[in-house]
Length: 99
Length: 226
Image: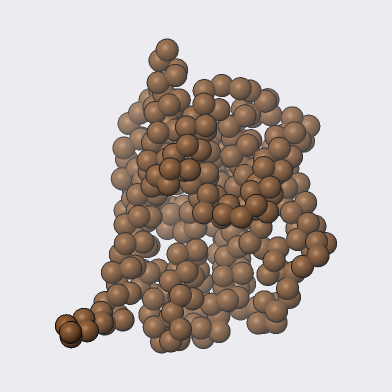
């Protein structure tokens, strides 16, 4: 089942890239398309952060992941590199679970 | 007065920039590989994602959803929705690349954030094309090597929670999101999207919260005044 998802999602992502190189240029002239598409990753990444921090499956939970996210926010504000942001978040969760 | 320094030949500058970007995303790929195997994907599935999908945000979305207990199809949906931005990049790149046939088929695979940024940063179309291909190839190599390293490192760990790896995906998404939040509007959109997604999550099937957020943001983009 996971394999099917890996293949379908990869095909979908490839199709979206190919569409960009193949669609007529006038699509780019649509001002609304231009304004809207950059907003989509912002909204989706934020939604993913929210749901993966405060939920397990379909249940809302408040656990060490919230503290890990808070530490990650501080790291991002301090402009830490990508790996550092991820590492301090994981370390925070791991340490809090040890307590 | 000292003689002006010889400018770096443009091609060498491109290679240097491309390698810098490729190494940085190689580090990102290490965390992707670790998160993916921690989420329950096998080593080969993890590496297949990096070879076949080759767009980091979507890959991370897929394994993040699976790791958080969602279904694989909810993950597929998240990956495809996040991948939609590559369509816009492709539209922008097609007049620069002018690729046809098999070349376009290959170029499509490389249409991602980094290659687009490198290509459109150059004014000369020839240099733009070169920047696109060099960055794409360098990234592909480092991205897949990093994935393998991360996946190998985590595969041996019996319980990923001990290392806090379940807290890694939100931090990774945050690091991807942060550069897009330099203005007030995207920040407000991000906060509202997170609140909406959390609020509807207990009420709807897995994956649907992301779909709702994607629909709402599309309506917002279509309806708001310029």
